[in-house]
Length: 447
Image: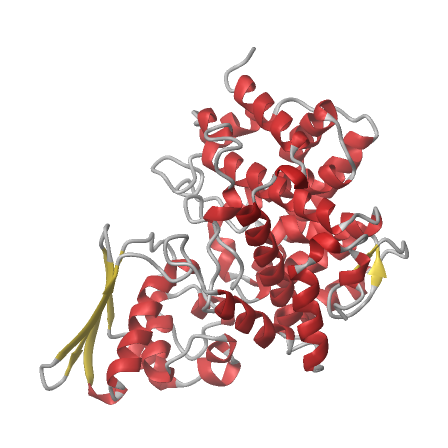
């Protein structure tokens, strides 16, 4: 037996055997919150710039005429592949999706679109959907940890976008669960997902190709599951892990398996920017709330952050793009201090073209600081205003409240669905999805 195969086999067996009735209540509730969050994001992005860009692309290519699954917001019925492709792009559009920080990963971006598409096609129940999502989050995070995540020498530090290189695993397992694959078939689905995974370089994140970088692994995972269902075979995913990092940590595949569920480690975002900017954003927003400093009075801003800053410290200007500003600590810190918010409005064309934001951003100095994060504002008259945090809002140790999750959902969903009663109906349906005999009860509300 090759290195890592024992751990991989244990993981596959566990994934196949996950049953709703065996899941702890907190795991079920957390999974529903993740589903709600991702659906809200899809609705919020559907008719925005990224959403329209992807829909225009698909209209140009031509949607499949197969009536299998639905594009959120638009109600277009098409193939599972096309629906998952577009819905995954919607989740990526605002960069406000769930995050697994040990690997710099967005599981929901691929797992949720794949699960919704295959679940609708197979007329799956709400319980089936929860099983599929729990399994998908387990699989994708564990593969990412085997690739050493954000650790030194890991895939992230080697320059890969983790969602790109591991997203197909989550999508394949989600689809595979809904197709009722057995252990051998699921192992092949995971091996096929490895074979189909796009190798995505990190700098893509500041280009518009970022909008579809989760779309490809989402459909790759669905393809892998359908292939496995039809008897296609593949080598073990352990070969893929060795190809990516050389010396994977295969023990991560089965560490605390069944004792601790990975959905509990997911972080939900409040702010519309890269998670790496959030320590500074949170501190800057608190300084704004307490002191309301006039931006013209600021001499300098020092940001100390405990998260990686790769690509996040570039200088911005009035010609900087939507993504360049989202993935930028100086810009997000500056706009937080000026506006007291970091929502999608802070990245509009009008806001990005305001020279005052960029002038303030150029006063930001970033220091990598393991242990805690802090923003320190020095005014021209010598006064210092600062705020320090040791964890970020949304982390497992500092989770969003149920009210914050619901408020975020309503704000985003209302961008596509103006009927407040319908928005409430979606919220209630998601949070009681285990009672649904088919998830079509939910899907029909999403457009």
